[in-house]
Length: 398
Image 1 (cartoon, rainbow, N blue to C red):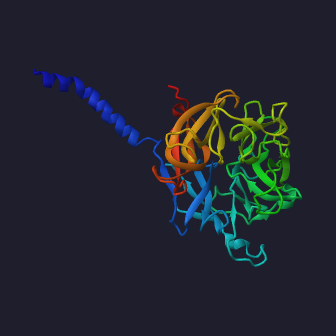
Image 2 (cartoon, rainbow, N blue to C red):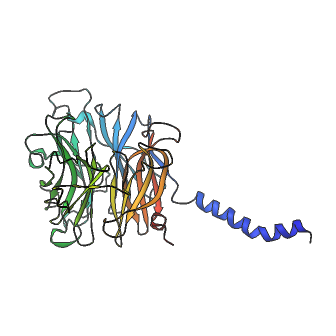
Image 3 (cartoon, rainbow, N blue to C red):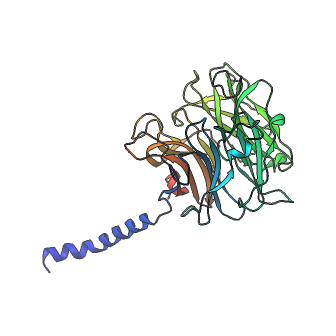
């Protein structure tokens, strides 16, 4: 046997192993799938994703279907996956902006509905698996709809503004991210919607900002205002907020700091009473305290998820990613000590990236729904993608 034959013989198993690895990677659930693409299905752009897993195991990806920017005509839509995010069905319009013409006194132009914050009620004895979808009209009035068939059909909208919005508040947003149902302690079964508000006239960006929670203790029959961050002027401008339940039943809220003077771009608060009040956990801060360090995205919405066994996952762009500053390079971070400390996880997407949400696809697999653009481009809003990752890949464990 000559030297060439010896090399080929010794290398063949390695070559085969490499080819099998490449093939396995190409079939991996980690491959990103486009769920919504700008310009398709009659809409110019898709933004503001939220995702849940229904009681029958399907995934529902929600978003705003827009004809332009934040103040354009906007519908709420969804797509369904029956195979853990590998494929997605046709677009379904959940709420159409034209449905609100009468409510708005006959106005027909640029009606905006949005800020999806869905949650599945698995503990309702009469309607197990009912989905609630809170959303806003004109970032001013608050509505809910529900589904008893895993998102196939939806109830008529019901306005809850008077019970969840204080006088003097203007701008109002639910989520935008999935909401949660509490699983532990005396508040088990409570539905908690993370929200934010501005003091002042509706639609105005001026005025103090704060986060708050909306809760229901009767499976969505009634809704009321829970915790309110009214520590205006403390240097941390709480904005779009996400929440997770820790192992001891404490709620951990994480918020976007909208260009506040505090260090970093994120804030955090705890709630020991199921979302009825906020505690900063710091004597120097009343509501939310600054969270810097590993959680260093640009100023943007982010998401939290409890992935089981004490693991908390955070999704958001990486200000120090390979693309550079700004809304790009979506990365997962994770905590194994109840959100006290965070570590960098894997990059989900390299290139423009912005808003995101998280879902537990199955035991051991997490899903990320996120706004994305092509590497080398400037826009983060070319499409909304879904990517499933093994939790072992998130934490780097074997």
